[in-house]
Length: 353
Image (tube, rainbow, N blue to C red; front, side):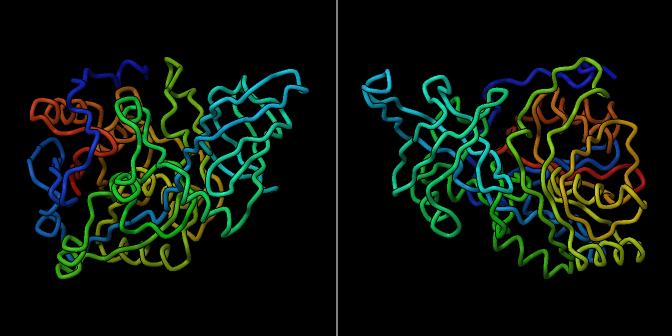
């Protein structure tokens, strides 16, 4: 299976840099097997049934992009200040954060970067192009300072077109977000708003809640021609006993389990990988889903349109088949669907589901 099998030409103008408003007015391409139907997200209650269960990722995006100054005394061998951009990746057990720093060469180990809101960080290590930072604040104090001075870590394909602003702190956060820890949004859930939730509840659609903290690795390109040799970046997630039981009950009663987003799908399939049945689970997952994967839990998927040659397109192909996926993306491009994090949605239902 070659990387080129998952490539396609995407017109630049179809990359969305802002979401539509209201959220549920986004377009949604419904795929039932190999048949496609043009809808909007607000049509979900008419498409789903009371036997269906949506699985939601409750992770909350932190404003992980920081802009600060490294001040260097003349006695240290350098002079003046340098503007530094920091993107936080994840904390470790000691409380230090791995991070991307631009430009990394302008900060030496032991030097401090000053941010707004009383926040500062000492560079305590460098490895493989990444930095390790120890902040002067922790716990709620750190969270409050980060909220005050940080910007949302927009994906590269948006950040290259415009800077993040205050509106992104609302737009790039789902209505389900309760558990801080992601540096990227579970974007399929960005389409949900209060009217849609009310309509789905009135329809009798059930919800289960899981957490997977999305890391910056979600944007890393696949660099190998043979995709089976690709190594996924690990991300932390958890499925509670309640969620696992709800999902098992839906499966046993003949209902459909529909994760909202590839993050929720990867997590519930991880939690079923050992036994074939979903169980309570927590830990780091590096599950890589590509064609040939056996799905134990997910019956369908709600997801946005993804980057060419990405692991997310491979996941869609695993669920729907490569030919259907190619036709799906051709249909989306021909009909001017909006792509990526702030773009439109799809509801993918394999043949027989």
